[in-house]
Image (tube, rainbow, N blue to C red; front, side, top):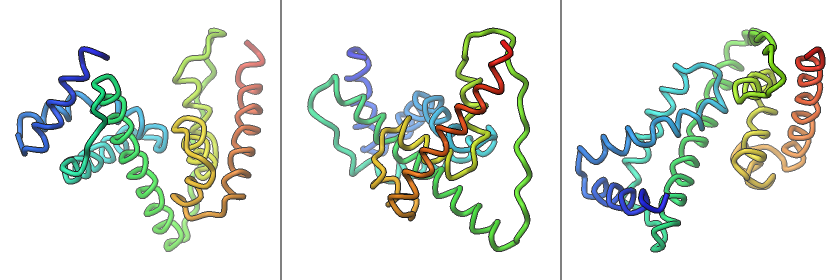
Length: 189
């Protein structure tokens, strides 16, 4: 990442100077990374693409206020953390809006489609994501924020507008459910 750090810094600075071609390069450079972040929260690539685009709109709107560390090696990591936080919060806001619409209409959510277990014993990222996607929505969000993104229960509670104790309970239940799902899917292998 050492060789990328100066180019990321200059790319960010060019974006701060409203250079359209730099914004396009930044978009192409980090599109895949943000797709990975948003796919932890939503189940379809269409939703993820929409969230990535919404995230980039927020990134470009707020990039003038971004200032990373002077250390070139830390700058890229810091910037990736900043855009990942924007993407994850955008995804959570999207889920909240969906939930509000869901509560207003009173229509029950359809159960998620189950994927077949892989033939090999190797646990692939797709297998892990399939298991995580079977979790109830709040459990999945808390699991991603705590275990993948590294947020504390206090931060999660604040983001999701829930009690801290609920965040802890959701994480415990998510881990328990993942153990059960893992055993069911992979015990026959």
